[in-house]
Length: 128
Image 1 (cartoon, helix red, strand yellow):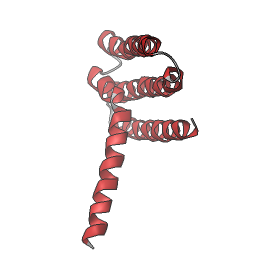
Image 2 (cartoon, helix red, strand yellow):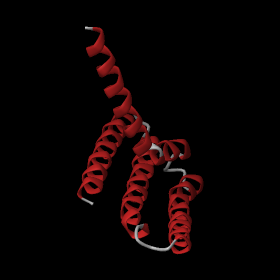
Image 3 (cartoon, helix red, strand yellow):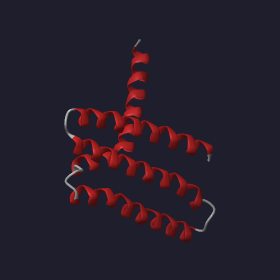
């Protein structure tokens, strides 16, 4: 359980920091709607990731059928949750839809970047 919490905190904080810096760059250059959308999408991405990490221990120790029901209900709730920023991005002109979508993928991007960096660094060490 402690490893899940540590992983969650690491990726969520990195995603939020990246989103804030990227959004600040867009806001300073005059693209406020893009910055707002990125932060909005990232916040909901973080909330989704937190809910995933909380649902993992709940599925362990139940029968197969109950685990499936818990997993599917969690998935349905998280899909509804992820639709909220998308609806906001479609309805409001102050929030850019494309940046909301990119924000929703921020956790996945952070995880991918970390693994790519580790892979590239390990390849350089073997070459030296």
